[in-house]
Image 1 (cartoon, rainbow, N blue to C red):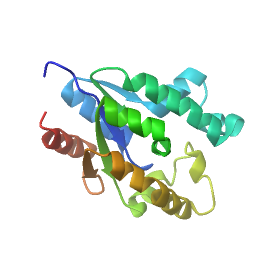
Image 2 (cartoon, rainbow, N blue to C red):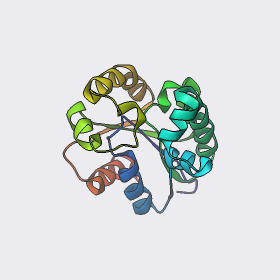
Image 3 (cartoon, rainbow, N blue to C red):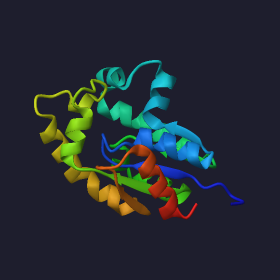
Image 4 (tube, rainbow, N blue to C red):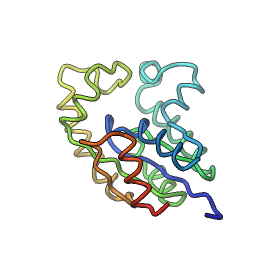
Length: 171
């Protein structure tokens, strides 16, 4: 590979973007970035605090800026936030600047994987399943629209999923 390609992971909360992304980057000897972690580092606060102070709209402005900056790099794996695809600009940038891998999972798996996680502001409600179902209706068409590859993450370890991605992409 003379030119290092970017791999952008999209998908719902709990699909495994961060965990799989770390394995993928390690296996391919690429740098790994997580847009949520990047926002936390830059603000010095966790995502919940950013949501509390700036609201979802303020968070999305930060997220779009971080993804724009990171996606201009070469040879990276980037785990994006689940809602980042709601922005047409983000979708366009990801499609233009790398390979988009949609990590798909069921609502049941999302509920299980996120039930104890207090760092996900949109899920701090009485019925997180209902929120996840509404988010899936809104976001799944965007994930599908921009995906070069779709990988199901339900019944496999992060390492196995990362290997499947590498095989599918022919790296």
